[in-house]
Length: 376
Image (cartoon, rainbow, N blue to C red):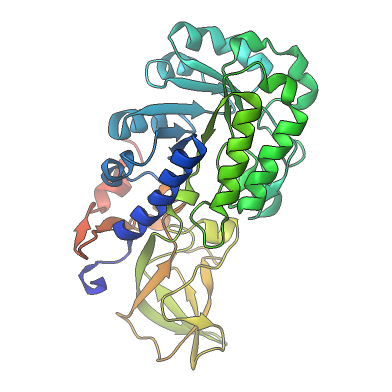
């Protein structure tokens, strides 16, 4: 089936997505909580009708994501941003049913606008709990001097009568020990405030579908928390719902040598997989090994002018040649939502692999997609 795919192209595997969503459904039903899709990590409207039956809605990090959730997913729309531009809260109040604020001052400034429009009001709190397993401080919402959430020393200044949702987000690609640890930490540290709200949102970063994640431990922790505080519980995973559900298909377009064999691809770390450089991390490749593990080792790189546009060093059973396909694994979360057209490189297209194995192409990005981002 990979021969049908023109590269570069992100391919979502619907069978694997269903397996992940079954886990989310189990958490919803057995723990009695809500599970939202964080569209900052995964936003493919073609998949939303498929996902809708398993989830309670979407959570957005800004106005356009919120609009996308309202227009194409439906159900509940939640939105949080560390800052809102003039007029944004007014517009969001027509889109989202749950609006979260970053501080007591922001809540005082904007809360009445959202409340008067009928929205539920959330306050994000910095819980002082660090469990980000990727990228250190770069991905830790509770890192020193973080801009995310009201600090605990100011919570007594909050008018909790105007707050419906106590919101924390402290995880990144965390396994169950991180999820359970956060839940227990919040219960121990913030009980007086939890008793004044109707809902607690434990944010994202719960890597639910990652092999080895103890779903039963999460369910037990949520149930115990709900019983103790008599509140509703919300989770908003992004990557945790789509981990290992798709690939980025690329092709070798040229070979080079400079003290090592270098394969130039039509996919790029800089334009198609920016987290390879930002996190950083090394994506897996179907059939490839570490450098030196197999007979032929290559440095895989993009064709942009950025010297550091290097994906990594991999080995293969046979020599690479122009036209060979390279399939990067686990490429659904924080990938296509962050792509760009630097150097005029085309955006990678999007496709679905349906459960019967058929491929449906969703896009045909070309010059128009590049030109439209540059204004008149």
